[in-house]
Length: 65
Image (tube, rainbow, N blue to C red):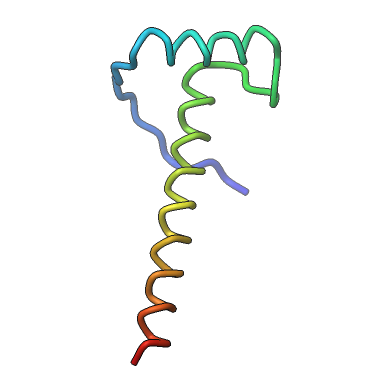
């Protein structure tokens, strides 16, 4: 599958959160190779969860009618 187009963006993170990310990278957990890769995957997972919650809310609303 072709990779999606990318652009560069700067994001500020609290130092403790960045430290946790760096620890994961140093330990080689989950195969992440960079902060950018970790943040991109974390963002995809969060958006996926939000979409799922939204669908569940819509289903609940439909069953109430």
